Amino acid sequence: MSVAPSSPSPSPSSFPVAPLPPGTDAPAVCEVPHFAPVRVRGGRYRLRRLVRQRRRAVAAGLAVTAAALVAAGPGEADRARGHPVAEPIRPHRTVERARAVETVSAPVRISDGATVRLLRPGDRIDVIAAEENGVGEARVVARGARVTKVPEPLDTAGESGALVVLSVPRSTAARLAGASATARLAVTLC
Image (cartoon, rainbow, N blue to C red):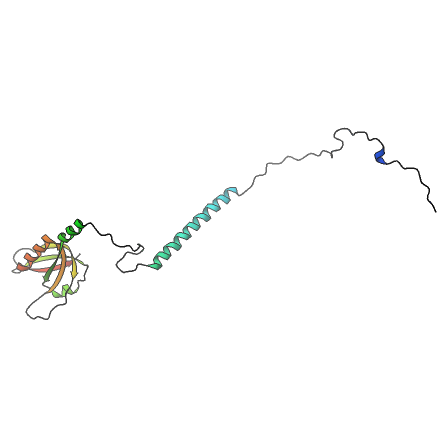
């Protein structure tokens, strides 16, 4: 069976196409309703939250640092807490000589031995002289003298009172020596 060739059918591209009028190939126009502009909410809130979180992070960092410094503590009991350990700065030679001249160690016999047992090195005391015969008023011979040493009392029956070593200026040491020769000495803690 043989098929007879049929006549060619007209293809759509074979016919000339007339151009369409402008705007007919676009979809139909529809009206867009009117609405208020869109605003992003939370912009200010996000900035505030970021600042607040940053402050919290800094505060937490400071708290951790402070806790670490307190936990580390000083190396010796004499140092203040939280200060770094550093070698003391040596003063100039003339300053050392001036300090050596300024204060001297003065041993002083206090009449009341029980009072001396209350003293510890580093204490500040006032030394008061009262005349032995009871005539005249008591006077302060040394103010704010630093106790440097409290020697152990010797077992001697003839002596009364107890010895204490004070760090005082040279002029005060001379007054203490003079007062101890003529008066009974007492102390008060500052």
